[in-house]
Every structure is written in structure tokens, then in C-alpha cells.
Image (cartoon, rainbow, N blue to C red; front, side, top):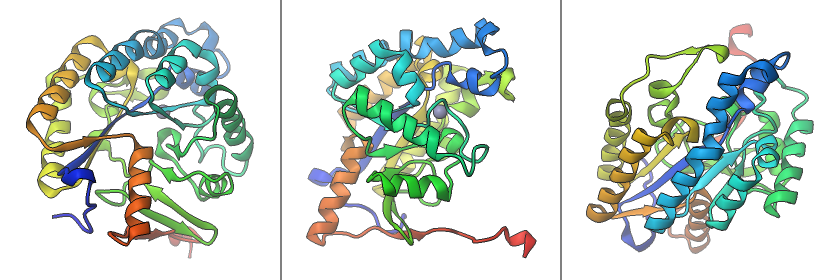
Length: 295
Ligand SMILES: [Zn+2]
């Protein structure tokens, strides 16, 4: 069972979002700022995302009539206009994912500048402030939550405190949270990236994806929410995406699911709250004012 299940539109049993973080080569530039321009291999590995994987992923989504959410650093919005234009043309959602994938913990106290620089890129390229945010390496902080509230954003997707969407509240206001988890993230099974400290044994496509489908089965049975947090340069590679595409096709045929964007879920939650049909559980922030081990 899950706590406080959300009644999904048209009686669907489970909401499904296959969300992509289009980090491209921002990862190597932020990790190795002194010489990333000379590091051609990791740059090429990242560029595969917008240049090769995004067209493939968008083809699948268009063929199956799906709209999904993409989280893109502001620097990548500016450097990969063709991929971004194709995502927007397909009617998909683009969320905030930092400026050049800077870690909000590493830049704590000075997040306003990169956060707002990214917002400016969203405004000029996507024509609006994004509704949602996913922190680079999930490292959202109180500073970022306050910036999101200040700029009228609606949801975060970086925390792991529940199975299904809920609300986050601090003294300044409230946001929705679309919870993530490492068990539905493609970094552990597929990332091998020495330059940024990951030396994972790369799993075969079917083995690496198998855990995701088990996560879906449990969420489906519970009437919950299944979200993948995946990267075009990892899961958008040919063999892996072929299997994901086959899974989407068979799920659409055999299960009662609602494929949607995270913004679509936020809209749905607003409607449920406004009509009194359901109300979200609330997680209050901050968890702590001081590091507990120092008190
Ligand atoms: Zn990322």
C-alpha cells in the first residue's frame, strides 16, 4: 500500500512519466573547468544526447502521442537550439536544471546568480518561466526552494521522501514535490564516467532496465506514480531506447496508465485540491536548522 493515493484522471491506475535530464556536455565543463575544452571524449559522450538521442526519443513520443518532461541546464538551452526547438515543437515540458549543472551544495550562498541566469535562458528560449525544477545531482537546498517560491515556480523533482507526489512547505510558501529515487535513475546501471568520479560496471540494456520495470509493477499495483529519471546520452542509446520503447508500447496496450508531464500532474493536483477531492500530504522544511551532529 501507499499513503494517500492520488485519484488519477479517468480512473487510471498509475501515472507514468519518463523524464529526461538533458545534461549534454555540461557535466564535464563543470567538473573540469580548467581544461574541459581539451577533453574530447567526455564532451562527445554528452553531445550524443541532444544530437542523436533526443531526435530518437522525440520520434517515439510523437509516434505514441506522448508528452513528457525534460530538465535542461540553461547553458544547454543556449548551446543546443535544434534539440530544444524540437522538444518544444513536440509539446513537451522543459524544466529548470541549473545553469551549467552546478551543484547547489557546492555553490551554497551564491545560487541566485546561476539560478536566475538559467531562468533568463528559459524566458528567452522557451518563452516562459519553467513550472518545475530538478536539482543537478538532486542536491536541492533551502536556498533553491526560496528562489523557486520567489519566482512563482510550482514543483520540485529532487527529493526522495515519499512514493508519490506531495507538497513541500516552508515559512515562505508551498511547492509540489515529484519524488525521485536512485532505483529509477539510469546513472547507477549505465554511467561509466571516470572524470566525474563514477566507475560503475555498465549493465546490459535488459539487466540495467529490469529494476525499473519492477518499480513500475509495484507502483501500478499500489495505484501510484512511476517516474524514470534518465539521461539522453545514457538511456537514449540505441539498444536501451529500443527496450524502453517496447516497454512503453506494451504498457500502453495492456495497462491502464496515464502518461503525462510533471506539469500535468501539478495541474491535476491543483484541480483535486480546488475541488476538495484529495489533498496532498505535506513535508515541512527545513528538516533541521542546524546540523544535528553539532548540537
Ligand atoms: Zn543533470
